[in-house]
Length: 263
Image (cartoon, rainbow, N blue to C red):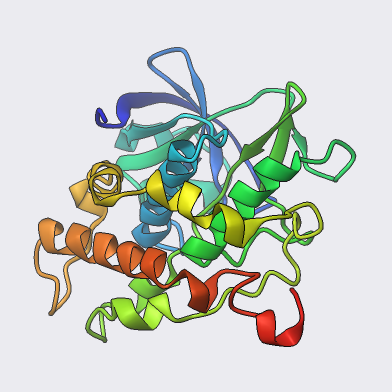
């Protein structure tokens, strides 16, 4: 798997004020338009790490995700921005940020064109694997583009890495945490998660996980007392995901909640 493609920003176009991190629409030197998640936003670079890892896990499962790129933000780009909040964000984010290919004319998912059951299975399985709490009707994080379902916004996944600055990595703890699918936007469409677990898990073997996590720029991997190098941090992500894949009966809807008679 090659590195994420790299582009440079040439013009800040407008903010997206729907999300808490204030992403922005940016034009790049390849003539493309990108929704940029900024390294200087309040969620920090761990949100960008989760965006890359989970987005590329989704792609490995055959799901549709806009192209992810690294985008260089030159300091002068904030010079002509009148909005002080946006200007502060741009000034806090020089260097490498995350760009998501802009899908012009895309609509938010509202259930009027429901995902196919097989696709719903894969999306719900991915969200359960990565502990994504942010795919509900309050915030579906799905788009409809050319009548197809596309996945976006995975920064709230992989919550375990937020504890690394103060706690040692604990893959077993993450592996044992059940996923609550009760409010998931595709809960009613997914039909066969336990039966399809092995199919999905085989697509995410150790080599695939390593290739995906290698895509994360080293500048976003913040060292801790226990994880002092980018390689140690990458290995920790692999260990957490591999442990969770093995322990599916603890977290996967349909396995983890059989005692309650369903989801």
